[in-house]
Image (tube, rainbow, N blue to C red; front, top):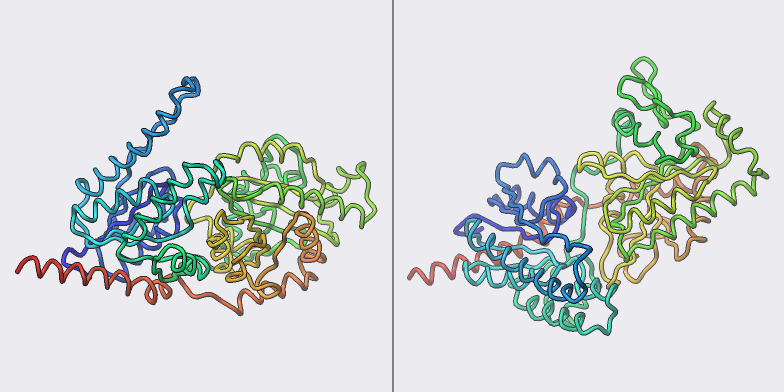
Length: 481
């Protein structure tokens, strides 16, 4: 695909938390037979498939140090200006000196500043092509904190548009974004929908049991709060035991417990573009509405938990929400969770390895997505992953989400916490055997299926990269003459 046989994937962020760029690197190595250099920050481990691939080389940049809290206010603007300069020079050092010259740079956007500037300069200095993979618009994310009318946002948008137009090719994640780029930015982009790779699939009973054994300690511990998931679960989930909160092993046979909690999974970056408060409010509403339907009072909490631990089945199940991810607002919401004191709902927050995360999705009963999109033009990759694992989804409604979620076929949409609570009540009534609405959605996910990442990449990304590499090879030949 090029004279040099190399590509460079650029992420100004934690590569372990950038799954789409990890999949790009795998496809460049496997499907385009290129040597791949990844220039990014460290922090979280990328998937084992990357770490074990001999054609992929990860280069971890140094990060800008955290600004001390005691720093005088008059110096903070100066430090904020130094940060992009530091990042720009660090990127140039790696892209122009540390790695071998590539045929093509593939860069994630956002962030746009200084990434697009640095990659454009590097592509010029190293006589390579560069392609932008548009995940969202960086200026819209900046506007969440500074406001749309900020001068910084205006300047940022200019840089993003100006240097984005200089790319030799562009990919984007939705047709709505493709239209915006074409009509208002003058950029021609190919749509490359997020699709799950092969390791996202429904989990087998054995995989579920082993996963719940590994997570048993995290599930039984409730951050100092006694709840419906931790009650009676002390010691449960040890690898030496045959019982977890969800499964039991008898001889060599594994069974799902009939009185197990319904497992609801949500993945979040704990940032301003995902209102986690909606989920907390919906959980409170579910808890109170079930208590009202069953005519329960607060004095029956311990009795109810004892009965559930002993195997009692109820019309509406306990709900265990496992929230995965890292981000700035995590501790704030964890404190809110500790103050809820719900009868039938429990929360656990955790960070899973790249290998265990697909297994969790494949073991869950429902996924919840709170992504609203700062631009209204991108789609949540977490929902794609959930569908790949056969998991139906309840997602926040916004402009282009219907490109992905087909209502009453593979999921439901909601606009408020009350609507989400109604959906939880409808889907989990009669769980696990008599929940017909939930089974219908799950069957819909499996029947609709989804294209896999490798297929989508082969059709939409590989031609673009081949074209850029071919053009580069022709230019090299002409210059040699």
